[in-house]
Image 1: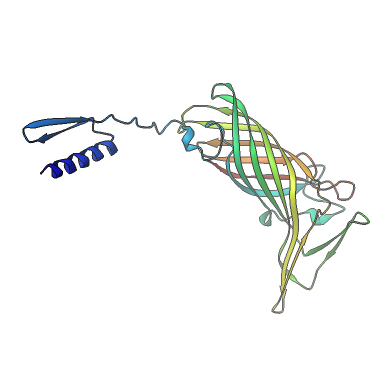
Image 2 (image 1 turned 90 degrees about the horizontal axis):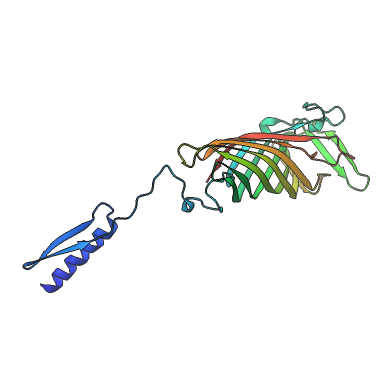
Length: 267
């Protein structure tokens, strides 16, 4: 019988430990009553931020780490979308997108949680899809871009992909220290360095398929600097960025600055 009592006590203690609503348990062993007290664990307020809820990052009030998905366009020196000398820069917005993976973040408070600076590390992939069946040849010896239009093949993909590592410096405003009430806005700069770039074409005609991939610098600037703004509620938001430094070397390619906007999800 003693073994049964010991087993019963073990079950009750285990149940009491994992239950947050029981303060004490009384059991009867023979002619004696035994009371086992269990300390209640504190419940989290779901409205508040908690450090453990941040997957990657050093401060709960920052809203940088997460995913951004949006569309991109190229603008000329006057802010328009047409390019008189190099019309291959008139890209198709439906085939052009930007994708950010923002990893590490840190919030430097100025006035508690309401105002502060945000920095971190992220990666960007900018995808520029050309409107027409352009074939681009980059002559690195003579610093020229030779452009022709293919009339034989039907292109299903004709794009330039550029990857960057980027570092934000943002000023952020939080309206509340509670997750379910907080509206946050951040604006500032994104400094980036180019990691790589490739040119890809896929086409078909009369049952035949054609695929071409080229990796190179394509007269792209090695660095970028974007002005950006982010607005969100809880973990969802919107972003917009404008490239202050031209995408290409302006001594070779006509000035083109990218603008992108889309949705973001932070964790």
